[in-house]
Structures are given as structure tokens and as C-alpha cells.
Length: 315
Image (cartoon, rainbow, N blue to C red; front, side):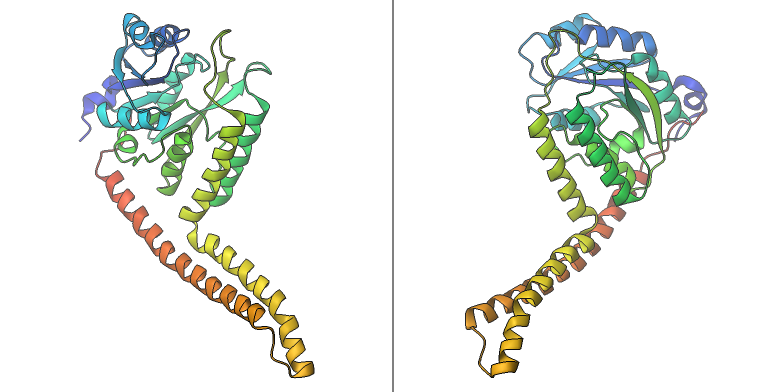
């Protein structure tokens, strides 16, 4: 249970910084967050960098741990498993996020939110690449339609979490799609979510982004399809079934008309194709029904895992 002392303002706060080759910025990020959250412990999780990131972070006063499996998803999974705290702040180590916004994110968690998202507001035109902005708007709009809940920036790497969010989050992603998975976890369980508008800066000169416009764009589209199939399986497989039935009807009507007009038996290959399409359509509908039941069961299990942990130490 959460004690009165923790509710009064002594909640344990952990700042989690996933890093890969961020030697140019990691020390400033650590210093800025130690200043913004003086009572917090700053942890840098180095993703097997080869540019001295870990040593520099340690010199700046952070606790450093190494994750050998490459990919931000692997790092987040390790961070959430290893660190014990009441409030978690996660921020990228590239010095593009505003440390001064961290107390507001923490404040939302202490007010009862399970996740607080730093909604990025670019301070100049070069901070937020057009392709990434478009992909973010596309995926954000898709999730709003999928879950019927408004959210503004699902790809933000700047967030705060409650303990019960972190310890009930079944991370599956290996790469940058982890932010989408974090948002879906909160939306699935209808958790309270807060948002804080925060300045988003351009990377310092010489610092290189790990994102790929085309590669991550295709990853976003794949993530959208995966989400549609797993979160709305009846609608997803129902749509496939509908397309197959329409195709079967388009192919089958001429066969039926030919038979009615001439009495000739339709061409066997075409008839077999029509029958196959109808069978696959029926199977697709059945798969949607079965997976719909599985999705409901999965959400119930995740909700039970979430409820095992106490709520945020509300002040």
C-alpha cells in the first residue's frame, strides 16, 4: 500500500534514459534532469554504444546499465523490469526534449494519471521532420478512430508513468514502435492519461538521428495493420470476408446468367474459384469471431495484472 509519507511528496522518482551512441548529448541530458528533478534518480540504459556514452553518463552522475540486444523496445523492457520506483520519467538521450517540463509530467502522475505524455511542439522548422510529423498524425488519427479516445502525440519519447503501468506493461516490441505499444496499453485498459505540451528541439549539430524516414514509415503502416487485426479482429477479418464475397459475386453472376440462358454447365475452373472464395470468406469470418473472444480474454488478463499494483501516490 502507498504510505502517507509517499503521498505527501516523498514518492520515489526514476528518470530512465535509453541511449545508443549519444556521447554528444548524454551528459547534458543527465545534468538537466538532475536539476529539474533533484529528488529523482537518473538511470542511463546504454544500448551497447561504441562511442563512450556509458562512461560519459556515469561521469555526469547517472546510474548506468547496459542492454546488449539492440533496439529501443529491448531497452524499455529491461528498464521497466529492473527499476523500482513510484513515478517513472522516460526521455530519449538526444537532448531534444525539455527537462523543465518534467515536474509537470510527474505532477500529473501524482494527481492520479497512469501515463503523462509530453506532446511535442517544435521550436523551429527543422526540429520535427515533415515525414515523421505526417506519420505521427496518421498513426495518431488511426488510434483515435480505433479506441475512440483523443490523443495528440503517440510517438513521443517523453513520458511519465505510474508504477502499476510500468509493472503491468507486457512489452513485445523491439524497436521504435514501442511508443505505439505504450499508448495502446493505456488505451486498452482505459487508463487515465494526461498530456503536457513541451518544446521539441533540433538535435545538436553533429548528433545523428537513429530514425529512418522510409523504414520507420513502413514500420508505422505495419504497426497500424497489426493493431487493427489484434484490437478489432472481427472488423479486420470481417472486411476481408466482405471483399472475398464481393469478388465471388462478381465472378459468379456471369456463370449463373450463362446457365440460365443456355443451360450449359459453367466453366469448372471459374466455378471452383468462386466456391473457394466463398469458403475462405466464411473461414475469415469465423477467425474474426474466435480472435474477438481471445482479444477480450487478453484484455481481462492485462487488467488483472494492472490491478495487482497500487495506484499512484496521489498527493
